[in-house]
Length: 269
Image (cartoon, rainbow, N blue to C red):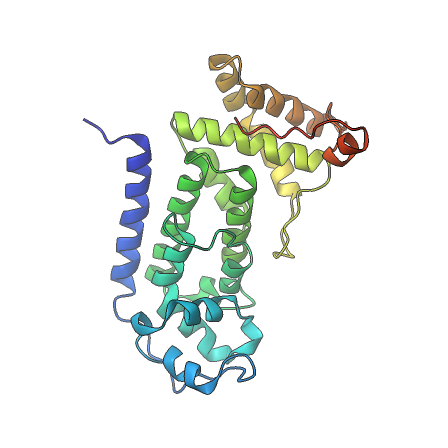
C-alpha cells in the first residue's frame, strides 16, 4: 500500500534533510575568530557563533540569520551560513517557526553567502531541500501569499525564478492540482491589481509569473471540469484570460469594495 499523499510529501522533506545532514556532517572551518558588528552582536556571542554549530542557542542563530550580510566579515559570511544551513532549513520547514522566509533566505544570494559558489554537493543538497519545501507548501493548503514568500526567498537565494516555476508546474497529484489552482488565482488577481511584488528581492520580475501563468490553463481547466463547483478554478481561468487580453478583470480591488461598503472576498477554498 502506498503512503498517503501528505505523508509521502513529508517523507520527501525528511529525506532531503537527511541528505543535508550528511553533506554538512563536517562543517567547514572558519579562518579565525568570527568578526562582526559588535554594536549588534557582542564579542561573547561572536565567540559562540565560531564554536560548535550545534551548540549555538536558537535565539543567537536567529539573530545571525536575520542580521544583514554587511554586518559580518565578507569572507567568513558564506562559511558561517554553510555551518548553520542544516538548522536554518529546519527553521524554514513545516516544524520550524520562521513563517516568512522571503527576506532571510535572500541572505544566501549573490550579495550575501553566495550559495551559487558553494561546493556542488552542498548546493545540490540545499536546492533539493528547497524543492521539498515548495512541494509541501503547494500541497498542504497554506494560503498563496505564504507560497509567494517562500518562492521569493528561494529565488533570491538561487538568483533565479524560472527553475522554481518549472518545479511547481511539475508537481503532480490531486493535492498539487488544488494548490496550483489556489496559487494561480492568487497570483493572477494580484497581477491584475498590480500588487504582485517581490518585497526583498529587488532583481525579481513579477512579469515572469505573468508569462508563466497561461501555461497552467490546460491543467486548471481540467481541474475545473472535475470540480465544477470550485470557484477558485473558474476564477483562475477568468483572471488568466484577463491577463492575456490586457483587461482589468471582473473584480474590484478590495480597497474599492470597502469604499463601496461591500465585503472584500478572497477565495481560499
